[in-house]
Amino acid sequence: MEKRVWILFSLCWFGSLLIRGAVAADEESLCQALDPSPQVQPFLEELTQPPVIDISTGQQVTLGAYKIKQKFHPDLPETTIYAYGTSLETASSPGPILVARRGIESYVRWENHIEDEEHFLSVDRTLHWANPQKGGVPLVTHLHGGEVLSEADGHPDAWYTSNGEMGPAFTTLNYTYANSQPPSLLWYHDHTVGITRLNMLAGLNGLYLINSPEEEPRNLPNGEFERLIVIQDKQLHADGRINFPTVGVSPGVHPNWCPEYYGDTIIVNGKAWPFMNVYPTKYRFRMVNAANARFFVMNLSHPELSFHQIGTDGGYLDEPLTFTTLTMAPAERLDFIIDFSKVGPGTAVFLNNSGSVPYPDGDPAFTPPSAQTLIKFNVVSPPENFTLPQFEIPSTLAKSINITTSKDTRVRRMTLTENADENDNPTGSLLNGLRWRDPVTETPELNSTEIWEIINLTEDAHPIHIHLVAFKVQSQQAFDTARYYEGGNCTIDFPYPDPRSCYIEDPQPPENHHLGWKDTATVYPGKVTTFVLRWTTRDGQEFTFDATSGPGYVWHCHILDHEDNDMMRPLKLIRG
Ligand SMILES: *[C@@H]1O[C@H](CO)[C@@H](O)[C@H](O)[C@H]1NC(C)=O
Ligand SMILES: *[C@@H]1O[C@H](CO)[C@@H](O)[C@H](O)[C@H]1NC(C)=O
Ligand SMILES: *[C@@H]1O[C@H](CO)[C@@H](O)[C@H](O)[C@H]1NC(C)=O
Ligand SMILES: *[C@@H]1O[C@H](CO)[C@@H](O)[C@H](O)[C@H]1NC(C)=O
Ligand SMILES: *[C@@H]1O[C@H](CO)[C@@H](O)[C@H](O)[C@H]1NC(C)=O
Ligand SMILES: *[C@@H]1O[C@H](CO)[C@@H](O)[C@H](O)[C@H]1NC(C)=O
Ligand SMILES: *[C@@H]1O[C@H](CO)[C@@H](O)[C@H](O)[C@H]1NC(C)=O
Ligand SMILES: CC(=O)N[C@H]1CO[C@H](CO)[C@@H](O)[C@@H]1O
Ligand SMILES: [Cu+2]
Image (cartoon, rainbow, N blue to C red):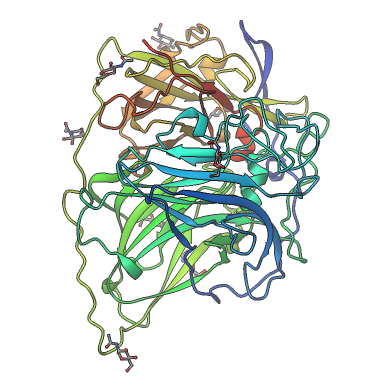
């Protein structure tokens, strides 16, 4: 095993703190070794689409969370999960696709029908978790990427149980969604403080589409040629139960918290390794990575094929871009077209994954072969009497909008750090050296523009998600972590350290998956990544609701195991 190096580091505002030093990925960083899931034949079942609910009618729709059993594969036993649906009978994971229309408010009532006394996955009670006094499973639903009033944002403390207990930020079960933003694929998922990783792994997630036919490009693949996809990874016991660690990496501090959960079974729209029959024409795929911690680095098995990316988290790119590899961090969305006419009928095309765990520096051996393929496409000839529609990818997809900054634009410099115990095992991660329960420090002014320079002082990549707004990634730049820790000449000025003399090399343009409007973007180890944010709607107008009211918003790492252990901070908008 790798000798782990410790660096003692002290910050004026945080006393003395241990930061995990240089550690290569090893077995320990994967926490408790879980038994492999039962082996089954992949590509046996066809890719399915969750049910669709139109929420653009002005009528309130009620969705509940239910405990159900779902079969991920014909040869796997049923798995107990938590799932969203309009009733116990129709609940599924992923939940129904909610389809909204830009400019039309929708009303969703989110109910909790989970009657378990205890969560079926192991809660770590030493984390900052909801801790309901009367038992039960607390839930609260966040619309990821949504421009919403904070009372309807699914604040982590706005949880509630089925027996009527509520968290301190709770206001209502009835959420109003403004749908004021451009057409895009959002997703809803649980956001309960300290157990988001359990509720998401248990199945509480689904897609939310904002359509706007008037402004969307015409003639993109649609109908059966457009698929919406949720990808998760799960580890399963032989009896079908979800296998989640019960022993942590630093059990003396956190009895069962593990730094990152990875599963060896790939679940796509609720099926393990599905296949899809496609005709030799263009198909549009809109995906979300709903994994707790796994990054997907995707390739197509045939070099004739590529990804024509047309959209990302916040909707359409300005213009299409072609890539052979696409990376999708937890919570990121990708919208791309594959033109299967480039290969003939009879071809089997695999959507493969080469993402390492932990990402990006983990040992490739920790990505089991079973997690290296996600979907199989069988290219088949259409029936004789079937005319394939002619789809087009236009050269312009959306109106280009840039956020302009000036010398006076407020800059916030934030650090990502990891704490560890005396045996060098991680015990949690922090944003800017602060914990979730520390007083709010990010209080941006409504209508203002800000630059966030996020410095990663850990060995992992962290997908950082900011609620309410979409932002642009401006650049990433190497950061001299060694000099920073040695004291060097980087000054630290609480609460916003100014370590600019440790920025080294030239700023690099954003990566492929960071182009366009983002709500989640990855900050790589040893890098500073610069976001430009505007506390307005996408086109620079004041929000259609009072974004300063209610419990406020949050920003956090979307590796759920990190988010649940202090890598989340409050965010409260104020009036300038
Ligand atoms: C929430 O919706 C339910 C169901 O439509 C309704 O009975 C209730 O009055 C609403 N509550 C509030 C506070 O609006
Ligand atoms: C994916 O494609 C890229 C670009 O063609 C290539 O460099 C890489 O080796 C491929 N990876 C795999 C796992 O096929
Ligand atoms: C892609 O996955 C398929 C099926 O698992 C496998 O046979 C193939 O070798 C993989 N291709 C690459 C380039 O990894
Ligand atoms: C095409 O032919 C099949 C089989 O003969 C028939 O079932 C189907 O309805 C036909 N479809 C169209 C679009 O004519
Ligand atoms: C926004 O910035 C991009 C990249 O620099 C540029 O290509 C585009 O023309 C700009 N759009 C506008 C409206 O200025
Ligand atoms: C900081 O130290 C480095 C290396 O010692 C040096 O190259 C750099 O010029 C210094 N920067 C400032 C602002 O003093
Ligand atoms: C925000 O900007 C809009 C114009 O875009 C203006 O009407 C509004 O008063 C501003 N609000 C605040 C709080 O500054
Ligand atoms: C790539 C890189 O610079 N990684 C660094 C990230 O931060 C840790 C902790 O300071 C360093 O050990 C890594 O070398
Ligand atoms: Cu993280």
